[in-house]
Length: 118
Figure 1 (cartoon, rainbow, N blue to C red):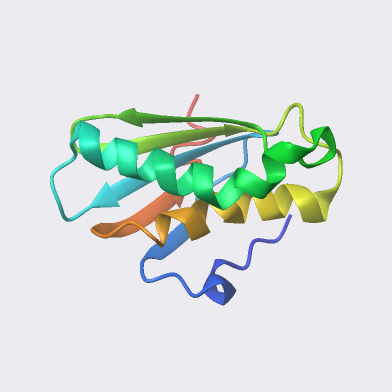
Figure 2 (cartoon, helix red, strand yellow; figure 1 turned 135 degrees about the horizontal axis):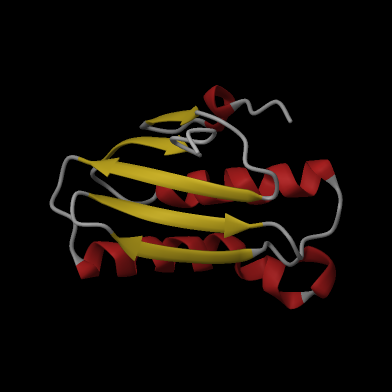
């Protein structure tokens, strides 16, 4: 899966550090304090990005969770129950990045940071 993050028009830098099968871990580094409100804003942006997807089982974007990790926000995307279509799965992966583009204060996002260290 070749990810072309440069073509998304993001205001922050996005990097794919590794692959971990059907799971994607987004480490979101910010230049603003990480608060519960910021996490709520990120969840809302993701929900709005994927709202049209929730209307059909065929366009389910995967299990998504957002957590506050003190100095960063972590987002988990599990594509395990998503239809086996590479273009659609890439749309889900990129959809989170596009949603984050609507939240201010992000410096960079690293996908699957530390993958393969275990």
